[in-house]
Amino acid sequence: MSRVMTCAASVLVCGGVALGQLQNPGFEIPGSSTVFQGWTSFNNAVPEFSIVRTGAVSLKCFGNGSGAFNASGAFQELPTTPGAQWEGRIFVLNSASDPILADNFSVLNIEWHRADGSLIEGNVPSSAAANAATPRDVWREVV
Image (cartoon, rainbow, N blue to C red; front, top):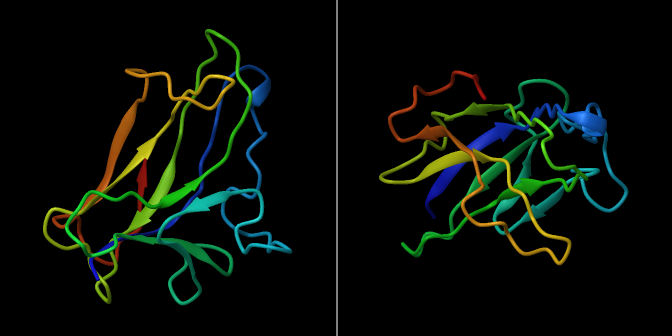
């Protein structure tokens, strides 16, 4: 199986009424139905208890190993208004015990969606977070 990254998501959002609305930014609060209380995880995003930056758990994301593009991760939906300024931050680790391989990579996205959930195209700022060349066993802050 092709691994993508281990990360302790510590995302900061700024802008208008959204400042401070992010729930459980470092996965410090255990949930009743999910370890990622306040987050929606998707595909191969799982809790990692043995490699953490702070607290008791981090988010580990990996591909399905089939060679096709496949994304995994976690997100939160927050309301916004036109003209609001947003910034995202995460801490990522390319673990030597399960490193990112080949052309796998991770990114930090801030996405805007319409009320119906559809993505507003061309309006997704991304920051490269990690790839196979990222130093191993070093927590890095990505903005």
